[in-house]
Length: 481
Image 1 (tube, helix red, strand yellow):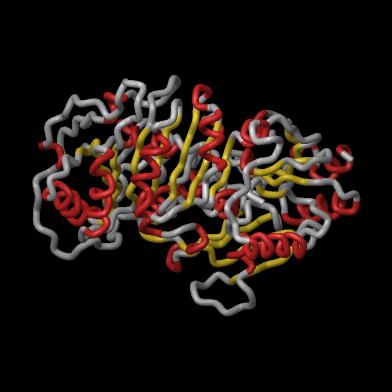
Image 2: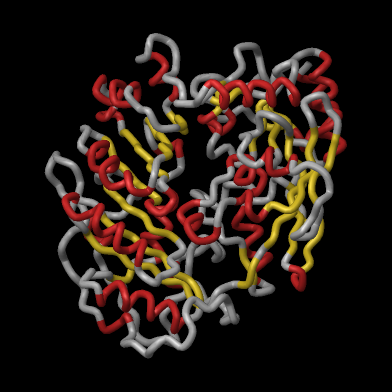
């Protein structure tokens, strides 16, 4: 069968079953990268007849969330489906192959002063198909919504090798069922995405972020007040991170205010998600464009460069829970962004500028493979403060919350893989996903992964959809089911 797969895609479509193609300890017997939709159809038609399971991967950043098939399986990589199919800057509509990385798409859009308001982890590896399939937008979901909200149409292939199209390249469409939005968030368990059409938007004039250390006692009240202020932040995050070895920024650097000599040379509007690769210091300023106005006619405020740096570290070095750190991200016109930051400071919060390097590392901290165990827990935004405090009390456990969206990420290093952590997960009543560490959790839970808290109706609907698209079980199951 391996040779039959390779015969369809040729020598350039052969891949190596490296660590990024594995799900835990399970490795595929073949890694195949088709270059066209017709090759995807041929591959699936060929293996469907033999009932050979298949796992779909883009950059492979979130493969650990899937449950590997029990039988020998092969991996379909979309990395060669990486061309721009159609782009109409005047209409703000872009169609690309599912294998294009987010960073590559942002570079194309930036030439026309446009961008996709998504900031998931590892944009240089994460593909558009993978982002849509997992419906993850990062912290910017608070203001701009999820990928599902920008999805206009897709082309996809069913597990038996039949290509189909859903949606249209217009914002308002009544062309049939919204199958494309059903696939958004299906994690590649229903069909293989080959082409994706999205609405993009004008690039804002300015990107800025501020943050400060809070206390657990006042965190809930602080978040509640921030949500009621007349602000439009891109994201509202809470960090309770323990220092880890490797390339994670030190506690001191999280509190540093970068030296910004003047408004013309300082890259205040730089953001790593939409910029090309390279150090922040070497990046040019993003071209000014009339983006969405946050508030009309804001008052003039003092530049951020007048703030004095503070030496107080963000993270505690004791063994108890790390102190929470609040991070706010803004974009829009320069005057509007500055006005919003001033409103935060006027409430008495010591909001300090956050460097692009820190934003990048906070964003990439959510890459599943960098943690021994990573959970995504869904809850009411009002419960975030209490939940983050309770989880971060556990040894070796860190928490990062997209507070405005009610999404809490809990990560454990090797020292945090304890019976106390297993007991806490077993007691969860909220919906959650195991993004990494499912094998360890399964081995410490009597051989079965603690299931997501779904109602019987939700579970029944998911099973019916799975059978309708994939009766033979060619594509994988989610760990939550």
